[in-house]
Image (tube, rainbow, N blue to C red; front, side):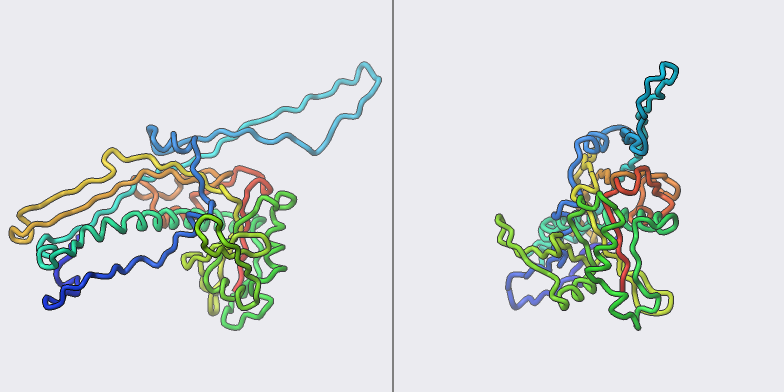
Length: 336
């Protein structure tokens, strides 16, 4: 258990200057870009009973043939049918707690560590939400890589240190990754990349910026795609040297999610005797999330505890594709 103590803060008793927050550098663009959207069904299921929820769906019609009309009264057409399937999603019950010693607040005067913690928890949970989205993305990438690989365009060299231009992000590679969706590729609208790949794109003068009309923020774009740069995008070590970087093309709303309140979403606990009577304050926050990629079934093949960890969300064994390739609105590009 970690408690904020006097040794954890830089304090000069002779200088009563305001503390400057060291805010987390994550800008949360991944969450705010629309990759994940609130889904009314998942919202209701997140608040419901049980950890596993089934999401039924109608399968598509068979477009491969038609009947040839005839004047033969003995020839009878065989009607086609429509079928159903089901996706399976998983609830996650998660929490975190932060603790600070009262003596720290008393010593710092107006600078209250717990107030600083409270001002950052929203950013913390946005970051953890992003991490789960990315873990699920990696899981379905690995599931596809172990199978048909029909969602992946791979130009990466296992010897990343000697990679050439042919192994790095390019318009050709982007287009061929996009084309894995076939005629449904027009649904794709967002490109998530590692900072190394983003640097390559900027050096190639591939990035254009548009200004958000509401916030004034400059949004990077690439060939009509909004670009999200995130250092948490997978960097996979090459077999020989260097890294292979996973870039992901998404449609908006590829992930649906529900965010239901826990029984006690926020709790504060005081231990007046801790610290030899000085007292310890603990803040606990709890979340109940249901995050699910469209077209997939959660298999529960490898979950050690009561809820899947972020690491377990990234395991191929926990995912099984249900939709046809062209109906999965995601594509992967692996490059150096």
